[in-house]
Image (cartoon, rainbow, N blue to C red; front, top):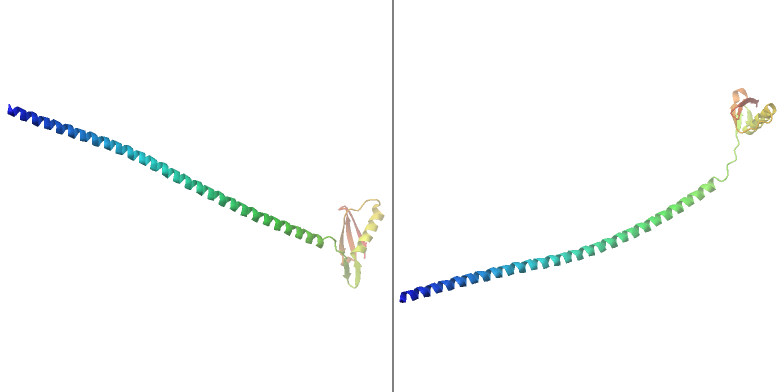
Length: 169
């Protein structure tokens, strides 16, 4: 019977080794699962921290951009106000200069000199109007055009684009 006791002891040792090995495997598996869970949790926390940093950086950048845009808008507004002001002043000055230059019409005198004779446009116009009044009577004169022909020593006239006549120098 001694040999059966030895077999029994060997079997018990083998079973204990199997149980210990299984126990160690189970512990290793549990440790591995815990490590994976810890890694997932660490990754999650790392992602949250990164998101917070990115969010803060984006907020700071947005604030800087907003300030820069406002500053640029203010600068542009001031420049435009200056340009408008100077343009208004230039237009006003130009208008005043133009007014001063052309407020009065110059006095015009036309005198025709031909072969030693001299006659003014004003005298010819008066003669033409007098002749027209004598022939046509009460017709009002709105326009008169004179055609002066020195070679004929006469001026031809057209009144109101309808009536024609001739006056001598």
